[in-house]
Length: 235
Image (cartoon, rainbow, N blue to C red):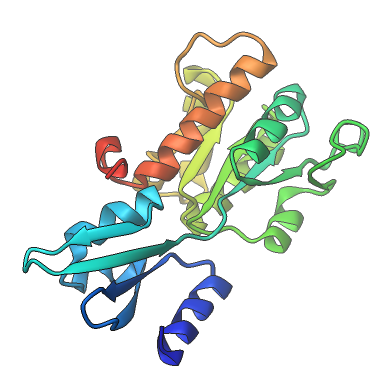
């Protein structure tokens, strides 16, 4: 890899951007392709699903050449709003799945190190905490407090930041009221349509651990599809 390509890759890492280094096997020539630029690349159809799956590997081009794709994705993050029972089950599961986990809850009775000893814990209001955390397209946000005073600001921030997943607790009726509040705040319908609520896959989950499984499965599916059909993410 030449110095210019290496500098592009390092810059992408700092900005938490996805990048693929395409190396021609015959010549050794390499180039870095950012996800934001993939549509203009001659290998766009091959690269796009790799940005979702995160899989590196050797592929053949239509011209009959072989290239190696070294895929580099930012570490995915999960920001959980609410230091609740489900969060206690979700945090260790998400860490095992490779997510950097942050719990945010201004209620210090819930947000304690005794309840969350092994994850980043911020006992502040989301409006104060989220700028410190930083939200981006490789961050998922799960709003779990049932309290609109806490959840709504976080949801709006996640939608504005383009988080790959935004989910929230609540029944369909509760979510309907949430949508009305967010519309009053000026959130457009396209963004509102991205909210997963009721949160989690529909697996009839009952216990906090089961609900955590349903949420994490939905987050992983969103990460690996990221706007495309799920079957493409397996490419």
